Image 1 (cartoon, rainbow, N blue to C red):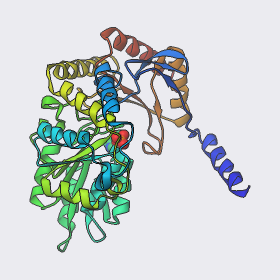
Image 2 (image 1 turned 45 degrees about the vertical axis):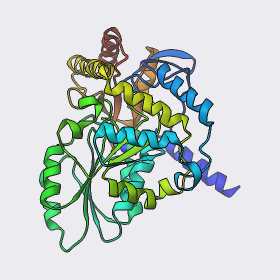
Image 3 (image 1 turned 30 degrees about the vertical axis):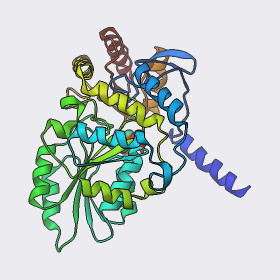
Length: 386
Ligand SMILES: *Cc1c(COP(=O)(O)O)cnc(C)c1O
């Protein structure tokens, strides 16, 4: 078949460029160590920053909800799919993040697309950091707004671009708080001030920070006492569950209910999922959450003290080690796996051309000994990088 032949050629092209993605299979729960393709390895590749994904309390909450409310929501939230668990979780996030309205989404990807396409349209202008996540980029494209791509964390460039806009167009600044592939942090305070000065809406994607940073794990905006119009968070990373939310004002949450297409036209999350997310929030807000965040930050600092090439903010769980070459980074991943260390190499298009890297992520559940072992193996491997 002609299409199949074309597709095979496209795949061969990816393989030739060392860009073909393959699958590795985990057996058993996600955690500080995992069984990967049948071998137990130290897991330095997951976003399960607080080591909650394998926690029995989350699994039990999900199991109880499955028992009580069944496996599927059966419809979108707007039709017949709003179950008690959705409403309870939205209230719980409002209370946790102290905001006027919360809308759940099935994924963080859907949240970014839903929020951006609801808040901006053709004729509006979005100012988007050049390293923003693919779901933000796709949201901007689908919104058909004009997009000004701002050099990474360049406040001066953003200020000039904002000052350049003429006429009564809606302006919206969107950024990640903790950048997913670089582990560095946006200057949220300065961004918030620029948005106020230029009357721009402000949307912050806290996918990697929610749960892992800030008072009660409320994220980096809460930490900086900044209140954007919308905070996007996911339950799939530090909270160890699944699904996502937009934390915002009551009217924006209501508009999202009416207009956000990935929300309106998609089956609601099965009730077991919000139930496990709720259990995660309880842990994250309590003293155990605080203790886990302290461990996480301490591992992050230890790692950076031992591995000087590691980038990112000092307390951040995400520590990229620059390599550059796509083939070399995949060779390193394979070599580290031999030493039972799972560090996923990250290649374009996930990161810009020529900036392939090992993306190390530490987790609260790692032991100090495991971090030390990881540093030794990584330093050893990096000595032989060409
Ligand atoms: C992972 C991620 C998302 C998507 O969240 P999911 O719940 O996994 O779909 C959105 N934004 C950023 C910055 C992310 O890293």
